[in-house]
Image (cartoon, rainbow, N blue to C red; front, side, top):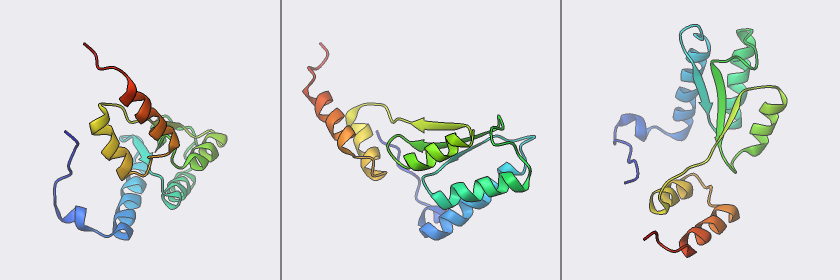
Length: 130
């Protein structure tokens, strides 16, 4: 079954308010790296820049072991490459699982590119395991 987030007040925030709160949480974590670790998992360039600015303000090394940036495979690759060129710790995430669970997730995050479409048809053409 696909994960369905609980319906609560936070889920009803506007995208702009969500971005503000996300950036605030990332900034809080980046300011407390002696007791926290953070994965800045976003495709939002503004959020990435704010995180980098916070790191700079705290004189944090770009490759600090408690900080990773992450994006889904095929989305915001320009951000990932830019971060990698600065020596920042990065991850590319590849959703994995049964097709009927993964496809709604990919569609939701607009990852349904030709690559995934191709993989989908390849997977659908494979014989079922006996």
